[in-house]
Length: 126
Image (cartoon, rainbow, N blue to C red; front, side, top):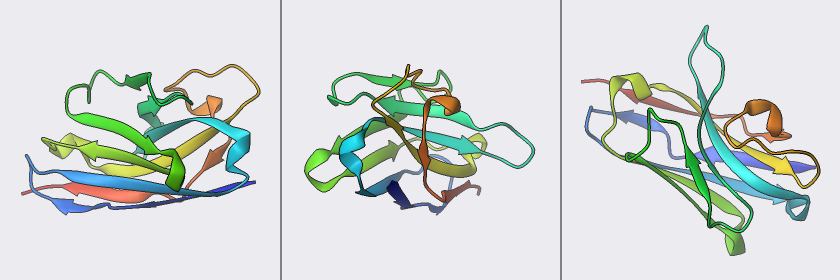
């Protein structure tokens, strides 16, 4: 099992920035790729960013490309999401996810992931 704990969410004004963190623990050696997703009430979970196991290839939703950056610190088993130029439409619960080594991985598809955190809320308003 792998446990994921997100932090760093909060309330910010439009144009502001946040850095979300996701600390992984447990059998992290069993996981390879990681991603960030977000969800608002009544809507499906949306993939916003993902990073492959080597940390070189990253993937972003069109709506966040150029504003969001995903990175990871393998030594700390921590995943990050730097969010800049925040917009009201970025308001959502943000979830960290990890995919096991087995299976086909589609970076921004929720069903490609096997472990999920509890989420951290990001609210953007003036």
